[in-house]
Length: 549
Image (cartoon, rainbow, N blue to C red; front, side, top):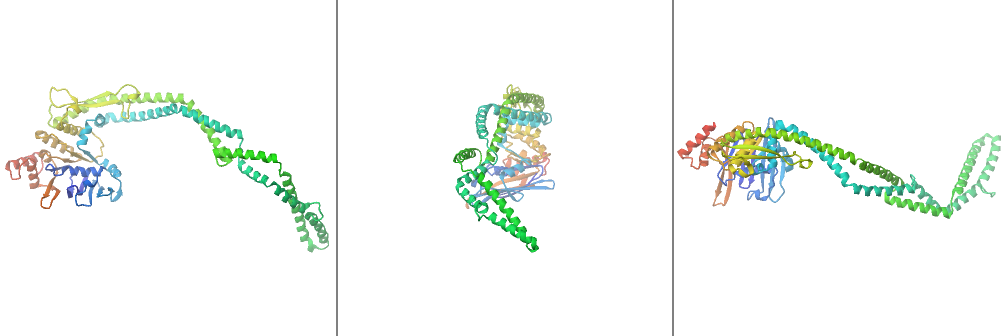
């Protein structure tokens, strides 16, 4: 429940602190005193926009705070409007967003004002209210329909995408096949770019490599008398013979053996290198052509030969998927048709459930209206098909729902949007809300101007209905009717205090009890507190409502 509401510097309210009871709370005051400011304060907490126009003249910022209680749990929310700055929201003392606070309050608070009256005339809202009032019979088929409809929509979208993208798919297939053909024709090998780059660099310096490697080989194992390998072999023989005579030279002899073998290996490697060194200009030209071709593919498909091959693999896979999609179009058609048929069947079951529930709900509304001083009210609910086929289905089914209403005997019911006056619309909204279970966890209902166009006996019936509604939920009602106010467990009065000399106007909110409450009811009756007849009337209203005077 909404336990406390604190308002600071909001338009004409300098400071207001309201502690509400769990039952029926009413807020009263003279026309223009600022009753709607309380509704505006709640609206700010619910995420409505506000600017400098809501900040009281002379104040730096407007602040609205609320404390909600549920058992041992509490929730504190606040909305601050700094003058000339962006609004700030707080949730349990921490900075938050207005959207987050609205989400937190949605399950705790429901606000009904003139906007709700206007929404009651919308056919979509009337469908919501019927489903809410007939939740026991409608909820299950509605849930099954929603699942079937979503599945049918998904299948239809997939089929439309396949059909609508056929031309684009063919263009993509043509391009992918060309690219794959280009790569496959080039017969790219893994790591080929690295190998070609090394070979190309070698051919560019073939002359120098031939000169230097050949010179080294000549010095090591050439035909000259000074060839290093020949000299080492002579030294190897001489030291070997000496080592046979003196073991002290055995180590030197072994090392010369190793040196001779190493020089022989180096010489063999140099000979092999020189044999493989290609200085043929024709080969060099063909290598340049291959390298340029590979570089062209790399500019299109990847930074290396390996990436070009990876792109080819992806293109091959994508071609397979696109070919499969085209082949599966027939299967998609069958699936879409089957899912649409299932959605149509689910919609039919939902329609039957609504048509079965509509008379029962209408009868309950009629009883509520009679309890609100409309003894001759007639109320009915028409559930009509929107049209045949899949195209007629929507997220809520295939039905249009309309409330029909008549306040007078002998007058056949007509659409509520065409017939109801302001007072009748207020009572219809309250009657429907009284039986509709929308958001069962909503603990607080706030009614603003629910008594529009109502007076006399009807007002007393309205007060009694609000009191009965408040037995299950906390109710806050902004009203100008003393017959309604008398039923409240707690009453708050709003007074506008103007100081002509100082040029200031303030709105003051205070709880009224005992003598003050009787005086406020006298004012609402249009009389002074010392008017004996008005006073007796006010006390009588409280007595009939079962509230202490």
